[in-house]
Structure formats: C-alpha cells, structure tokens
Length: 419
Image 1 (tube, helix red, strand yellow):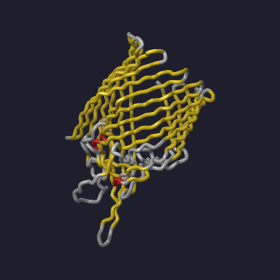
Image 2: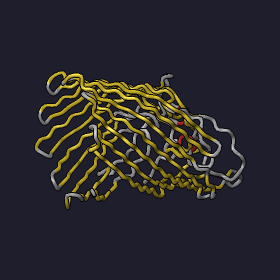
Image 3: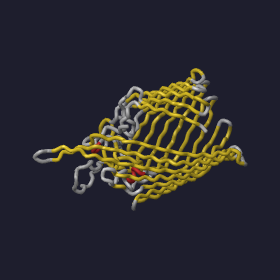
Image 4: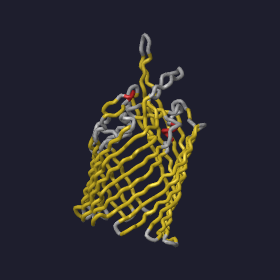
C-alpha cells in the first residue's frame, strides 16, 4: 500500500499496516403510533495505521557521507457515534427529525524516538429537521434546518464552534418521465484532527508529492453555499440526467507554501514542513452527466461524466492537493438471484496547471484509465461471497486530490452476511 511519489530527500514512504474494526447496531420500528417510524443507529470503530518514511542526507566535510534516517509514526483513532431519527407523516408533508453525536479520539506516537503526542479529540452534536411537502401531483417542495455543535482539543489547544445551516429544494415533473429539480444548501465542515494537530509531535504530517505539511490549530471551519439545477429523464429501461452545481466555499481548508522557522540543532532528520494548512475562499463549479440502460433484466450499462472547474477566488490556481480533475465512470453490471458480475472503467483527466512546491505553477497529475472487476455468488439467501480485482491491469496513476500513488493491482475476497 505505497503512498508513493516522495520527493527528495525522501527515499520511501509507505503504510506499514492499516487496520480498521467497526461494530454497528441498528434499531428500526415502523409501528410507532401516529404514522411515525423510529430509527436508532450506533457504532464503534477503531483504526490503526503505521506510516514509515526513509530520508537520505549528506553530511558535508572533507569526506561527504550519505546517511539514511528512518521515521515511523503510529496513529490510533477510536470513534463512537449515535444517531436517532424519527419520520412522521403530517397531511401532505413528511417530516424527518433527530439528533446525532460522534466523537473521535486519536493518539500519535513516534516509534523511532519513543515520543507520544497528547491525545486529540473532536466531538459533534447535531439537531436536524427535514420536510418534504407535496404541493400537487407534479410538484414537491423540500426544506430543512440543522444545528451543529463542534469542539476539538489537544493539550492546551482547543477549538469550539457552532453553526446553523438550512436547505431548500423543489422537484417538478414537466412531462411524463421528465423531471426538473433545483436545490440550495448551506454547508458546514469542521477541520479534521490531522489538519488541526498533525500526526507527529511537531504537529506535522506527510503528504505525497509535498513531503511534510504543517497542521494549523487555528484553522476555521468551512462554510459553503451550494446550488444545483438539473433535469432527469426516464423512458422504459433508459434513464439519463444532467446537473449544474456551484459551491462557494468560505474558509476552504487548503494548502500554501511558507518558510519555516529554523529548528534547533540536532541529528539529521526529515526536512521541516514547507507547506501548511490554511483557510482560503474557493469556487468549485461543474456539470455532471449520467445515463443508464438495462438491456435485459439484470444486465445494465451505466456511466457518468463530471466536468469540474475550481479556483481560488484570489485568482491563484489551487494547490495540487486541492484540484479535482474531470472524471468519468463506465460500468457494466449483471445481477441475478445468485450471481453478480461487474466490470467498470474509472477515467481521470489531467489536473492541468496547479500550484506545486514553493508556490510554482505547473502541470499536476497525469490522467489515467483504470479497470476494476467484481464477481459475487450467493451461496444461501443471507450469505454472498465476493471476489474483486481493483486496478485490473496494474495502471500507474494517483488518486485525485490526495495524489497518493495507487497501490497497483489489488485482489480482495469478501463475505457479506445478513442476520
């Protein structure tokens, strides 16, 4: 699972291991009096990852000597969450309302130097209500309101913020099979623990193509105004749609180059961060097309194409870690009572001109075409075996925005069981 493309002086950067265990429990009761359905879901998750790097330095002098220095960071994150939702029919309207809670606690350990950073914790509380109102047989209105309470802390650093957001939407059936829709929604996204406090004692973390990145405990939460306007068409076994979207984001959590302060004298080690996490104002807009056709029962060909244009509202191109390229997906699926077969192609365009290291503007990641294959067989009604090959032809490419090198062809076996 290489995270690849480390630039000098990094020789190697990899996940030594990743381990995630998740347990969830759900309770659903649609027999509550008053046309109300109640749903409660809870989960516990623990994720552990060891990330190792190797850097090379040359000690100057009459006889220059090249040395390699390892580093190894262990991240251990525990998460818990509870969501309670109730849905009630009131005349021609349906109201969904509830509460959700989640908490993440992370511990970061430098295994080489045996240094453990203070625990970092973030906590969410949310109250929400969403309504769908049928005006006529052809016209539906939607609206919702949400209150969020967020706090994060690590040692003597902390952040606390509250937000009120709302959304409005409408769906109108123009003719039989042709539907128009429009939505406006506000967004709120607090920063992650990684962006706030990093994954090492000095508050930094590693990003492929960029090396060490400095976290920012003063990072503000993102707030966005989002609109989308689209058409959906259905005729027999054929469906298609087109949508225009625009996201105006204030305090977008992005990256910029900076000059770090000189560090204390000591033995060679990874270079200090030259990029830091910052807030900026960003506009992201684009058009998405999708279509699907069922040739025979169970055999479906579908695809989508998304054009994206994003820019810093200061006029500066976005950083390489921020630019989403044009993407497409073509998928052929066959599903019967027992058998599942799927082959798909993921298509990524070039990133175009982006901000690289040292604030230089240049070409970003190259495009690629990647194929995936999945086969499944249901041995009994409640148990299905699956076999998946991701990146079937071992294409060399990077994940958009993350700029992580894909790990090559990957074979997965799975068991899906229902109880």
